[in-house]
Length: 305
Image 1 (cartoon, one colour):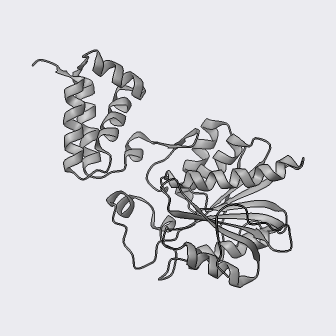
Image 2 (cartoon, rainbow, N blue to C red; image 1 turned 45 degrees about the horizontal axis):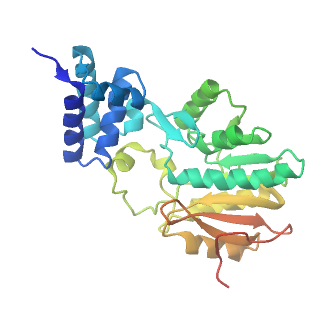
Image 3 (cartoon, rainbow, N blue to C red; image 1 turned 120 degrees about the vertical axis):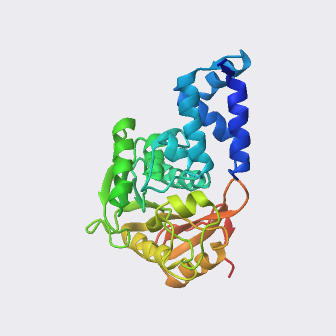
């Protein structure tokens, strides 16, 4: 039986994934080809341009991967990797796959910690609900002078984070604890708390099959009809951990920004509340300062009076 061109195999995979409703069929077809060939995307493109053929072993492995992706198994579960800012993380079943919009959240935390670092201090950054460790690792990678702690309740998620930490060689402390009561004894010492807590309303079912069937429920649902019960409890713990003037960065659903800002404002624990947009222009992250410290809202969408 004659060998098929690699280009034809990738085109067929793209068509299969498109028919299955995968959101990015071409990108996923190429990513799976790179994984099956054990090379990078540039090499896949090079081989396609040169008219390379799909060897039988590759064709078998590739077809199996495409079949699983067409069944809406997340791409990251198939490759075991998720890309986040400058890092490649280890992920798989049992851990929430980090999303591109959360890269903005990590960036806000890095900027806030850098302000502390600029004064000569060694900032302490805590990532509550750390999951894969994406935010915590990004902070440490881009601001090596910071002390970073990631707090995660799930044993499965923490195992993936520990795996990434070992491979990346980043000195991040990982703690298994409930983010709502974590780090007793550290009250008033933290410069930045960043968190991507579960925030989906309890009655809502995610549309994306990959999220609904494969992301852990512990990382998804916010514990109330509006999805804000857990985020507000995590914010209360953040208020206890932060020093006066310390910064909270909290991700939220694009429909929750105003409600979350108002709820945080009512507590009296925060000042300079502002909402920030993600790269698609949607409200994505609240930034607030712990009361009794420096104010100044900075850029963002201010809390309406």
